[in-house]
Image (cartoon, rainbow, N blue to C red; front, side, top):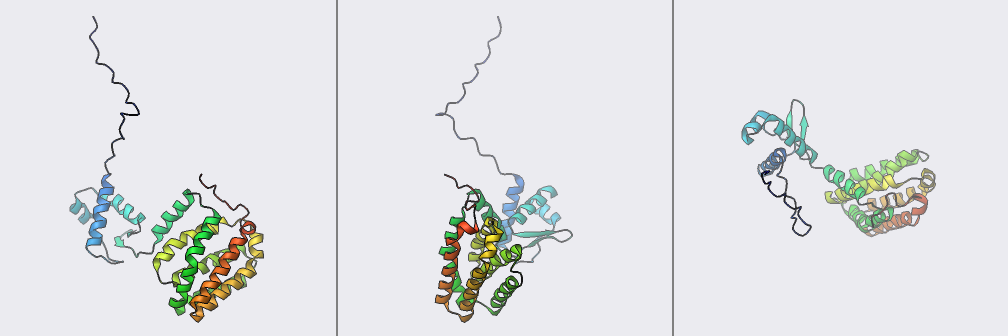
Length: 256
């Protein structure tokens, strides 16, 4: 008689099956979190050097490989810079990591041109008013230089589109709050990618240039109300011409 075999357990049903167990965090992720917390707790400033690789190996009791991978994680977060021969230094916070992540989020969420324009209408108009109150001489010089470059390259689609977006980024920065730039820069990046028809864009360029000039004039005069209205007029006009400027308006199909 063959020996009895243990019964095969039944497959868990949908009712009884629980969530899969959480995967424990990887060691480099754990070390990266500890290193980040130590960096913040010690009040290190941009440009300050972190301990050397051998010192970090001794401090955290892990291998060089783990320290290097933890460093790369922090570099991707925009917290440190890694250069051969110099080790890790604290990076200057500029929001670039936020811009990268937010741009990816916008793309994955199937953003439409109309949604981007709505975002600008809500935020950028008030930021432009703030720019009129807070702009510096350097801001004004950059805005004038941007307009001048467009005037010299009216038939160059790429140059004009680049300066168009740059003009708005300078205005946003002149608002004096870095969070505005960190939020709006990826929106402007998606807008830049949405323009498909160079001919229609260049045909509307004289009007864009005039509207940008009105925005600059109001900012230079320190007139917040005029800056707000000039920005609103410009953005409303862009929204009204979206079918001409972006024939494929929904450059990514929106999710249902």
